[in-house]
Length: 494
Image (cartoon, rainbow, N blue to C red; front, side, top):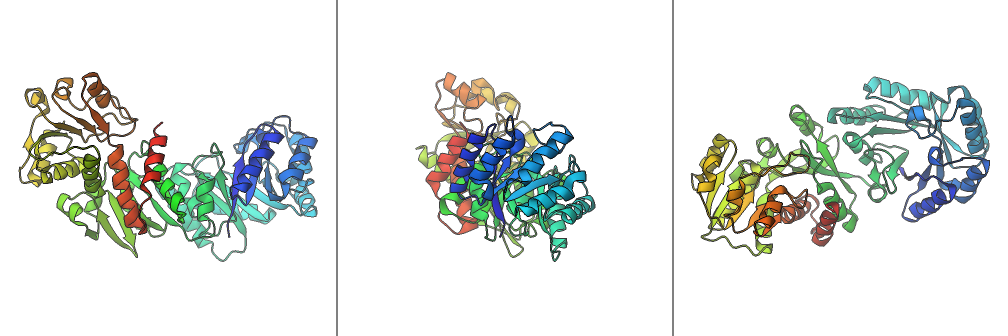
């Protein structure tokens, strides 16, 4: 079973020991003491840590060339490593390249004190699979455990690493293979199923990009993982991972929810690799809600009617597409006390989210007008509803209204998107209530303007949580812990 090691970065021995004990109490099997972060590291400091937590610790003195904080010269580094190997830690991490000349003698010294030797290599740049495989073999030749970390910038690179591990099945070597960065996080989530020796998890601030939290790592330990996630391009603004991780933690389920930033040219590859990555379900965000709908084996009623999917369930190679946005928007209207029967509504946008909004409003009995920067897209959306909605060119919007409700279903105002209003300020002043589907940031330019004009409004956070709860139930078969999801979503936006 893969051991979970919490990575401890502290600048003094007392703090490193305190944090180590806390992490072990929280369920870590081991701690990795990043000794390169400890100031004035000397004999007494090393022995103090070894006596305190050494038998459940990996002692790592990472060189600057391998991504560490230590810039000591080679003779001083060797002296420190000899003391570490002499101090009875459970593991010591030695570097394939930096420590090459001393690996044999350091290994003998460590073995004499029953310390397991990890020999590691960290690539500075993404590397082809055959080079990664060679590095694993080189580390295995001189260490009891081979550890290789390689930066991953594209989804396909993470898939190649997973495939590489599976192609090496049957080899007796103990190993750790990490895809570094957010794009490589799936290699960490699959650590146990891939037979990796150690899962390095974050304790407090992440010591490396893409690390799983200690809570997630311990939840997956020794269990067959269920991989969930979000696909889109980009996905940095999304808080779905935080929200769903809170739900999974509340129920103790062996699953991880991961962000997958998939460029358009990689969308087909994602579907082809989903089964190999043990992906059981995922959310879909811009710009793929309509494209994904066309790739499904089956669709639920809302998804089929709209041709839009935001939630996918995978079972035995079969894909089922759902539209939980419809549910989420309808329930969020109820929670806001908004009743739209025979009322006037303006929807801004013509993408997948706009379709869900229009569908709900029409079924609620509202009179809907639609505007969009690209008129042809708005007209196409109107036709999909048998022209039951009126398309209003953006240029003449200020001559229309008033509306009881204005819904922004565009990305305008999203974190990372240039600030700007989706409609002219004069149109905002004609709306009785402003609903911005954007939830990050919590106060968008649209909502800020609405407040200045004394118009009530709300962000799309309620819709996000309600649709997320529905998706969670589809994936897991468990009732979603709604309060935990809502609380985590709000905290993520602070």
